[in-house]
Image 1 (tube, rainbow, N blue to C red):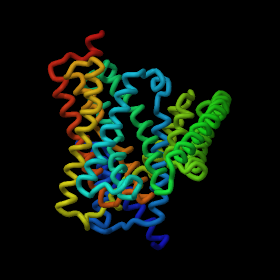
Image 2: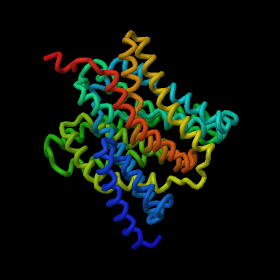
Image 3: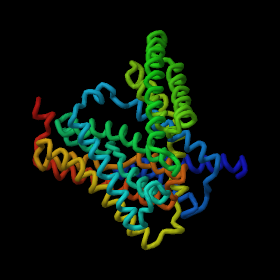
Image 4: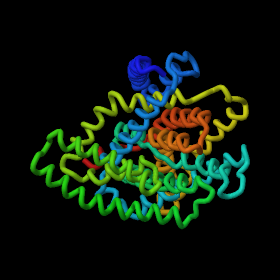
Length: 396
């Protein structure tokens, strides 16, 4: 692609992604859905105005790293530590059941292959995509219903935070096992080394940033240094430990999330992500999606993918809640609240594409899952809470 054409393509992507993102917001859908649809329309699937290129791939990679950095920054580490065994158990089962369900689904359609082979790893990766939870839609719904700070709302949010952490660990393991010659001990060893490295760097870096934050509060040098830390850990994770770069970016966010100015850093980072890198990343998902190989077989797989992804979250999280003593209706609320998918599922899918564990045609399945879960979750939650007084209102 010519360098000048690249700038034209960027202009088209930014304008179309934002227009469709705003339209999606008006329709009460996540903006990312609109941005993905924009990529589909301007890409090879429909109009063919913009083609995927190495330039766009690089910017999209920066975008995904910044998104994960932002996710880490907005994590409440104190709440994460204090969530307790209930949220941890719900999150663990809520990851395990979709992982198994997705693997079995792929195996049913295309076969498993021997353990450790590429076909087997592709099956496991489909399950890995299903492990991700995005509760942004759930949060808005619970706020509207006055249930965000209730017992069930707190359990959903705490479980979702832990769910994302476990999901990133699962992604790390799956990518580590991509090479058939890779041994489990080697993956465990590299993961363990990265955890030790993260704690050492995190402990030292946190106190350095805390000192800088105290001397120069609310100044731009803090988010600039934070972004540098994000890029360094993204590099170190993959270059030194063979772990996904997004894991390093997420850890960088976790390191800084307890700073006094963590919200300030997150807002500054979000400006770049919102205006430029984010739209390019989400539109690039649409650009990569191809319908050339879309046939009846893939259509049936897509329907199965969506159903399995939704039901395994409801069953895994809901059944665990039920076994812990929650009423059936409350258990269903937890399961339904945990079934939404969003940015993290796309990030995992993007990583799978880059390492050769996912074909681009399966992006259509992920996009369909995000749309269906984003629409169905608020409706089902409102039905489950129908006739109940808001807990916040009841407490006043």
